[in-house]
Amino acid sequence: MIDKITFSPEIMEKLEKLSDKFAKQGQSLSDYLDGLLHADYLSYWEYIELETLLTLQKPRTEHKDEMIFVTYHQITELYFKLILWELEQINAGEVKDAATFLDKIKRINRYFGQLTDSFTIMTEGLNREQFAQFRMSLLPSSGFQSVQYRLIEILSTDLINLVHADYVLWLSPDDPVEAYMDNLYWKAGARDMKTGKKTLTLRQFEEKYNEMMLRKAQQYKQHNLRKRMQKFVRSGDVDIIAELRAFDHWANVHWPLSHFRAAVRHLVSNNKVKDATGGTNWRKYLPPRFQRVVFFPELWSEEEKDNWGKSWVIKQLEN
Image (tube, rainbow, N blue to C red; front, side, top):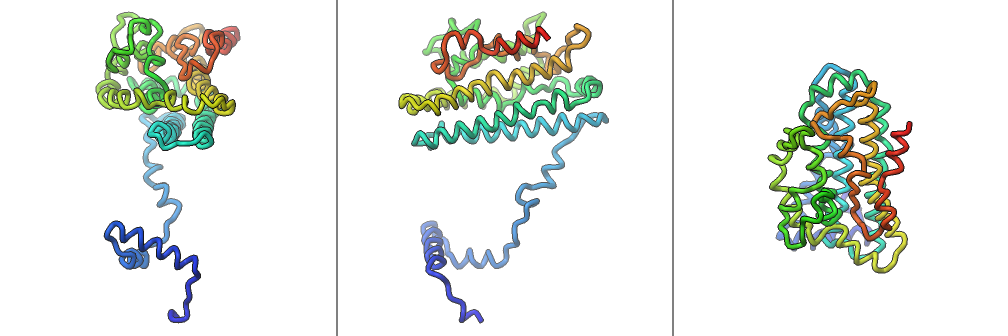
């Protein structure tokens, strides 16, 4: 029966290419074919490691809605991973043409769109009474400690655009990366409102990630998305500009405002305001109109930057 088997020219061409591929690495195509004879078929559950994945949700209390809380945060981190995956490709110089660059930014915007649109899971989808109880078992952990989100910021723009407004004028281009990192906007939001000292949440984060983040900040100082985009924006491509502006809005207006909305729902009751689990001053830290973080300031008018997120917050306060 085997003697009667004939291979099409297409199959023979593929076998020759495989043989050449393995030969370049000193490998034998025949050996790899032997391996295929003993390999099992791949299943869906093996490919996505389903059993392992489903063991990673470990609530710390008996409250049923904590499962929603921990699972959603893990989903969020997976989307952050995808956003970083695209940013790393762009910043590594792998994207050579405007069409591919545009496609990458559209992908990032889809991920952020999914994140923002799904955040009703955290606002309307959690039982308020349960959340008020199990959140205290999570101290001092906080979404503030998401290192992937901090990396998205570092990979997206120049550090000066992430510095707290009170310190921008004190820094110069000649200052070391450490000076910028010490004065990032979000660090100001993680200090005790009474003493000004760093919260435990911030101290934990810095102890674990400071060294790595300094390396990343140095690595992407001249190779971040804002630097890379200049090659394509100079061409005047309105589609690229529109998608970059959308990315700026998703990351720096819509995403933090979705958190602000959830905080208002769960942490404000009878005109009394509760602290965030990490002790962050969320009323000053989350609203974009206070921080005015803008990845690509050259793509916005001065009026647009002055009103960054302002209209949404005013509307919420009026309601």
